[in-house]
Image 1: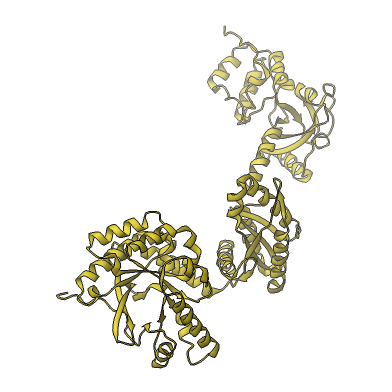
Image 2 (image 1 turned 90 degrees about the horizontal axis):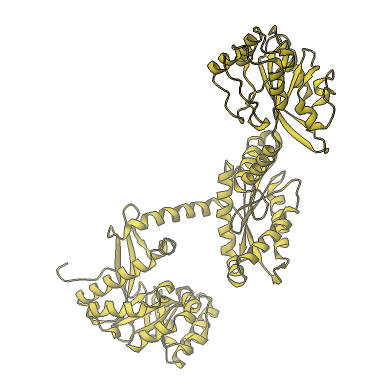
Length: 611
């Protein structure tokens, strides 16, 4: 005789059995061990595994389990169990329903199922019951709500198994588990998956999904999806000055302001960092999108009080609209990013539309960056030399080294065509060292260049390195080149921006006899104070001025003033970009003897005997 197991606690009860297991219980009832009028069981994947069928059959067939045993099993279960007839009326309820609701046992027997359970779609459940009555549906799953004894509404998942046509059951067996906590967690996870954790705005994933839905619907809605990409100007300085906690507080405040611009029609999402997009559908995007952008800029310009600090900040905006700027949400955001770069280049607090030509240039820049990484190890760079001539004697004063790239498919490229890509690719230091080494080597080997100083263009990034002067002097010693034969050229724009950080290097280079030349002088960054403060040997009058000789009297007056200023400070003036005799004669007339340009010699490789 088999031993009866002890009744388990409610939390350990196995869950509802499937139809085959119900049939096993029906077979056991034929031996008088199960009263199906008071029995039901429920299977849920979240509960404990069901005992093996052979064990179930053995114990059930041993005539040891009484009707009261199965009644206790059902009543001790944490699941709510109901039997429902073909009309949808409750004909049995387990004790868990009474425990949960606080109502008397069997208070719901005789009531319509859908009058007891809060079901969002009554028609669907009625249809399922009707199909079960016809034998057309074996199983149905649905969610419902039910108030507990404290009046709190909870959510349940129900599984209804059709046993209407089983002779010993004749009912729909419905079991339900409380899934409120799981639902709450799912809601939180769903929210987190679609929202930024800091600002509460939608995230990139959510924005892309909605934009793509709008694009699919564009023919029916007759509205144009558009993206406005905002980037906070100088936001890094806020983090640096006040800390990231203050920066985060600024982002949260700005996000709240943008969310209120037009919450019914304009979506707001944070892509990351300080990049935020506004996205909407516009009937007239050319008018409406800039209007929203200006409202956003106005909101951002208002001071933000964060952690006791009043923060003043601005933003730049790039706008892209379907279909000109892109055929998908991702393309629209990329297009807005291209427009944003144009806005930032134009100054802070501005907005720009997507420009296909700008996008093509950006793609080309990306391609160049990729190709540049292989150019140096592939020996594709070249050093050219262009003479600077003293026109009163016709003698070469010095040679400027100019970088060229022998591109595999585009031919010989001027440095202006790729130098920005060099910096963005992080190759500045490596390429500078290569230029120095190659320039020195060719200067020594060339019969002409070796007798004249060479001028080398240096980027501010290299000049700002604390060890730049030491490294340069080491290279000179290795090449056996006298430092007095070297001139260092740096553009006026770069010099003004970096001068406060490089005095030690400039002083060190000047102390060994190197000459400092300010290139592109007068291009809009002129700061004459630096001419007096630093040991500047010469200034190069920018070619944009020289090209207007004979065309603009104002420019000619300015050139004359610059040459006189340089002379009074003991600084030489070099006219660059000289291409005509008229330009050369004008410069000589005003005392600018040193000149550089196609008129006096084009850039070319060094002539090395035997090469």
